[in-house]
Length: 315
Image: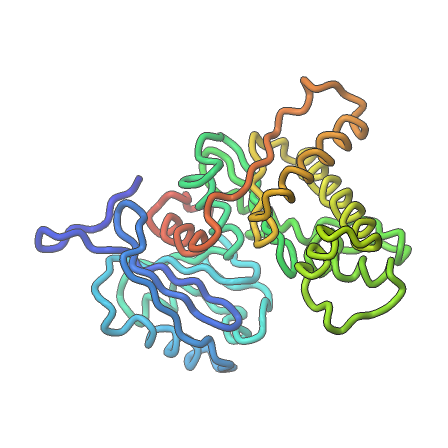
């Protein structure tokens, strides 16, 4: 692992920043990848890039010295740290800006930027439950699907940083009769939509997939049919990833991954559908599906790994 900088006989920490649509989270991270302090500020809604980055910089004032800055944020971020897509409300001002350049203007420290899901995947690959693998995929199940491919060199970015954007894999949706983004079908949002479709009614109060999962565990018939179909779709999602990349390990993250029954059930369905789909025997099924180790903090730790050189420059 790369070491922190030494100044006057003391190690300087690295500043990690996780930019979200609601909050900007900060942490000073030591050489052992422990967060020695953490804090956050509201993201705000600045439309001007200078106002946004000045606000971002205000969050690290008087918080201690650091040797470099690792940043992660939503959206497509290229290998050079440029934000190439709109991503989330509150961070529109980042579009078409070069994040490291804007950070370095304001603190004169080395900076690097990476997509937030890719940061989480890098963290799992270097520090988490894929650290013993030479290749891995990280899938984060939330409102959408976040994704990341890693090989022995770190995150696979592709020519423009688009590699591993698993939400955008196309999948045919028989309910709509057209191709959709696979992330729309397999996310928690997709779970809620499917429940509404199968129940035949909209429930405005059913705003989160966790409510569908609660009803499933309580034995509600519609919720059982919904979750079984959703798990089937997720298993086919994993098969698509395996067909493209064939990783040693797939790490599943997001709040639902912390439910003990979920990973067990998903693994069972995936195992069955993999053998059926490929018409193969057990020897062919070698990818191991694991839970992400880091429920919280993986984004910041991945951003720190990135700026410390655990992610090679792919320019």
